[in-house]
Image (cartoon, one colour):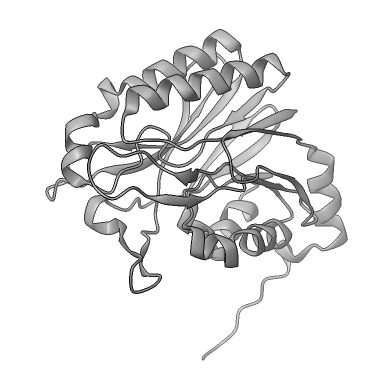
Length: 276
């Protein structure tokens, strides 16, 4: 299966981002991709709660979800919408950061709400409190496709290897990590974390990313790291999307998963232990 990782620099205007994502999907399908993946918060990158309240929608009426489902059906491809910011009925008014796996007929094959919230102080000038605006998910998600079992994660989840191990031990052969990584942590940790998760799990890791400076009508303009990566089950970086919007292509080989897990069968070597 040929997969295409879409790298974007989404603004805080969902209609613009839908046009961009649709164009990339069409290009990827035209170049032979059967599985297309977009980054985290494909529909809206914004630091402004009021802006998000103005432009975001509930899932049932979300135009980005509807538009990309239609486009996937027209192209006849599998599509991972890395995530969309979606309104919810949360009593605190928080959104969901939700990933969607779309089948080639346009149906929603799986949905996953990001579990781990990015609440960090990267530096004196770079602080994030994702849990203020987004409610965390509560369940891991595994989906069946013709090219392998897919385990869904989002961005900050990559720092929690137990989630990835649970998915791999449940059969995941492909692990998706759509992201909007910060430039500071991205430069230091992005590639090592993704390679570690691939090696530990003996699985393909596909990580489409946001990049660059994100245009904003309101609020501070965010910057993200870019460098969409695909990593083999043996830990090799198969493609790197650099720091600009574009497409990266990679071949997904189920035999590579079987080979890596046969050579180092660590997923079956867990042992109980006491302490600390």
